[in-house]
Amino acid sequence: MALESGRPESRPAGAPEPERASGALYRKVAADLREAITTGAFGEAGRLPAEGALAEQYGVSRGTVRQALAMLRSDGLVTSRRGTRRVVLGTARVQSFSELLSFTHWAYSMGEEPGGILDSLVRRPADAAEREQLRLEQGSEVYVTVRLRTLSGKPVMVERTVYPPRVGEIVAELPPDVVSHTEVLREHGILFTDADHTIDIVAANADDARLLGCRRGGPLLRERRRTTDPTGMPVEWSQDRYLPGTVAFSIHNSLATSALSRHAREGD
Image 1 (tube, rainbow, N blue to C red):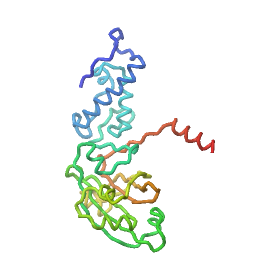
Image 2 (cartoon, rainbow, N blue to C red; image 1 turned 90 degrees about the vertical axis):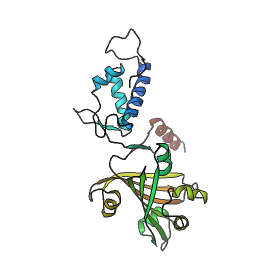
Image 3 (cartoon, rainbow, N blue to C red; image 1 turned 135 degrees about the vertical axis):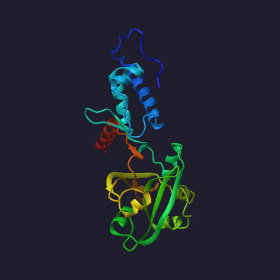
């Protein structure tokens, strides 16, 4: 996993790299470690070498190593506690919210084979929360699906989705083993263009345990999502529950973007 040398020949051992070189080097170190982690070089829940060992291995300063490790931590690939070495977080796949991707497209982007197994589909009156999220009138009905989602045949997530009638009627006609609802809906002119996400931890219920093979009451990573079409009308309200160690979410924030938005609001 050695990198091509980016050090000036005259730099003393252990001295920090020049700022330009360091900026490029920590990304190279992070990319190399990311590849090693995703290919299982350190095993599941394994520990990365100490900072000093990594600095020596790559011929960089400890500061550069720390920057590289910070990138891996933000990607959800490693974690650390004060006084301990970085621990690899199993085989978690990183999903970025900077781009709206369906589960199927996300899986293919990582070289995985996505799967979907329908557990139940019911049509029933919408409750108050569903009417609010989907902007439905009193007395409206919704279609509710529960599906087990897999990556390369392995259970990863239970997907619970509530559809408004115009969308649910199409979903109800699909084969139970269809991989992607999103792709079929797109063919019917229903587009998923914007989404709001909320992420937290919940305890697995009986259905989660049955479908995922996990312990009832065990922790699951939950993503709640409301997705709208180009006109701003809701097309789904979904709750996805992931097994620990199977996914990590990456979110990019920009101070410049925030400042620009604030300036635009102040100019209104």
